[in-house]
Amino acid sequence: MAMTRKSFRAQKHSSGRMRGERTASTHPLVGVIMGSSSDWETMEHTVKTLVELGVPYEKRVVSAHRTPDLLFEYASSAEKRGIEVIIAGAGGAAHLPGMTASKTVLPVLGVPVESKALKGLDSLLSIAQMPGGIPVGTLAIGKAGAMNAALLAAAILGGKYPHIREALRQFRGTQTGRVLANPDPSAAAFPHKKERQKKRKRA
Ligand code: RP5
Picture 1 (cartoon, rainbow, N blue to C red):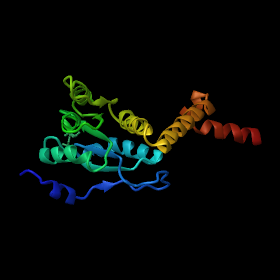
Picture 2: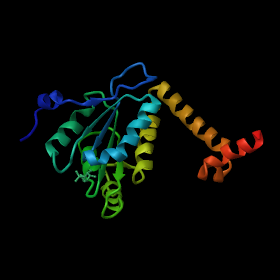
Picture 3: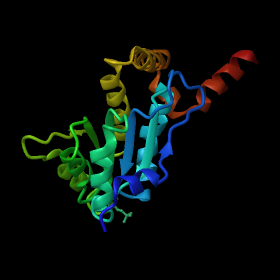
Picture 4: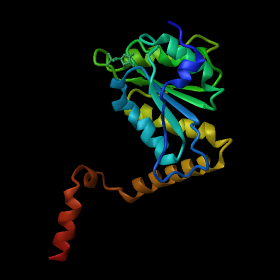
């Protein structure tokens, strides 16, 4: 049964209200969707990164195969609802990002979720190998891709929202600082080493 726009709107979205929010508005700018609740383990890294950057988001499960009418309704109404970027994560025969992109002109970023059978190679190819005319910005498989999808969404939004661009700049600066402050790779591999060295110095 096809969903009406009204019934779709009536469904509860999980909207991003964030602690330490840096934005002026809490209106969701990024729609984070995933094919299954089993994708959350990966996609939570997208949400965590959006929170860190202060980007308002909404999140929900939308399955290309199990809820195709909902997918069409979500994608075709997203722009009108004020969403500016959609991040779609899916695994296996991962049709969610591509089908979402086919129903909206908003930028769609696809996150290939690591599948058990093929370690996410199936997800990656399903998302990346779009026909000419309907692009999906495809990220890396798994956690890195999930995190980078949020960073890329922030980069896209940064052109319109200066506070998001600044949050991204700060994120990158902090990341660089963390690497430069920890040049000894063995200290990270053996976190107790530094502590022991400090104790020896104190003794
Ligand atoms: C895809 O099938 C989902 O994105 C998920 O990665 C995969 C498996 O889903 P479940 O069977 O765990 O619900 O549609």
